[in-house]
Length: 316
Image (cartoon, rainbow, N blue to C red; front, side, top):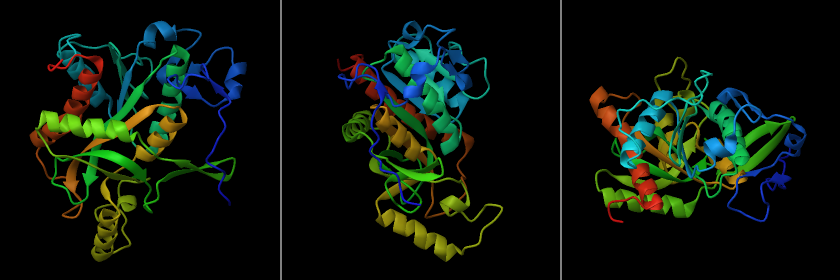
């Protein structure tokens, strides 16, 4: 089937003349009396979105609920908006799908694992920001990944998300037709994150392409899944071709994240630490303590950037 054009006309948005607002593209929402964000357990008829979320400037998303709670506690300490040991309430406590924590202008949200899970979350997150009237919002995904040709513990800031065929696109079937969307991320934001890493000077950070796959095992050319119908030589050839194409890590959410944030007019970035060098093996062998320290690296990097933007860095 032929691909539908990627240029999709915006039919609905807040203050169309102001690019700083969050865009939505769904005229059908105008006919809905109450917009229920089911997977967040929130709704416009039961919650005052502008009061609850109108001051949000940064949204940080990651796979697990515990990781995003940990990040919210960490950023609370960094912004001096609370003690890192404080128990921050889960705004989405009425559902077990996602978790959401708010610390001042920073929203921390879990998205689960894989493209379908994060896509559902993003639809409701974008509508939440829209209903709240938020402006100049930056959205950053932080997480873990498999590295290609990098020392474990390195942090990759995504320049562009590509699919498993190394194409810079997100493909989805809608009404039986193939729709292809752009996976471009904010170049300026990526460079700011790299500069923040240099200022922290605690771990290696690179900018590179990220391959987003639909699967953790065969889709990422692993040899340790329940099924495998290719040789180790074929795996290595594929990964080396990926490296030559500029790909430095592999995960399972960046393509739809980039595509949806771009449609919504949101500045976006993906920051992932590498837990394994896939050119040397498939399984994670680091100790729990080492992995815990690795997973703090994206938090430190993003926190440093947020403090700079909010004017609360030590240098200010």
